[in-house]
Length: 392
Image (cartoon, rainbow, N blue to C red; front, side, top):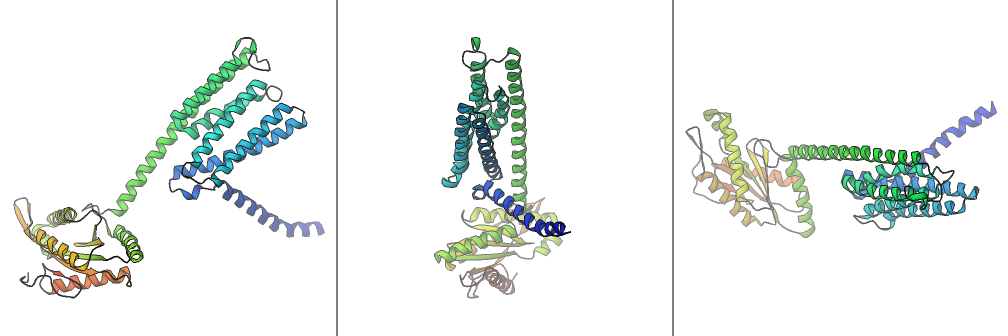
């Protein structure tokens, strides 16, 4: 009863300690991976750390075992290999550069190749050392890709053949039968083919997933009708530009546009003509604006334009130019001519107000432009930039 009581109280603590140890190990193996946004790079960093850790631990244990068996040269070789594995593991900790994981990967490959060739040369423990060379193809393929992996594996295979097939086993310390050497070579070649095919398939799958991800990301930020940014993408741009303008105390302006009498266009000409109107004027906006400006379909027939590093007066001039260009444009579709005008509200963003507040102010000015007769630009002061327009 006392033993049961003791175990029941120790088990939760032991479980907690195990959880902490596992979490620390996971964090240790993920070092440097959080510095990269590319999933492929993060995956390679994790595997590099994992392989370095396993290689370090395994060769250390085998080296100690070799010393206990008084196989001194093998023990020293395994200790050296263990030290190199540890250096490759710690390299990313001390040299956190964009290429540090590649340097660690190359160091792992060189260390593994040297250790495997030494095991072939010496025989290892009870002449079983050469069996470890089956690790070479998959490791080479992973760290160097298909082409680099094939090159490195081929180079290793040539070194293996030179050692074991040299006449009279003159380049090795032990004797291997012809059957053993040949079968090991065939095993190495088979694993090379399989590992190469797997690496090719894995990389192709990765490219397809990345392509699909980019496509879905684009679809999530692009309006399907006009092929310009949607509301979600514009909000992201607004937040970034707002933060930058706030830091550098720079001006920025918003233009909120609305197609005049768009419902009437749909009713008279049909919704397909209405869609053509939106697509056509979207292209007009894109051609008129600068590269750093951002235009989005804000909703329905509304468009929001962000003008970074732009004063209110410059924004008014841009808005007036857009209004005139739209007014002069006539859409011809199936023999029908559709006249289009837009109303625009211009708001100079104050860094002390929020993005939502700035958009609301631009919306109020747009409403004022509509109320005062449409086909006009209303700026922050609430005065139209032109006063000769007739109500539409």
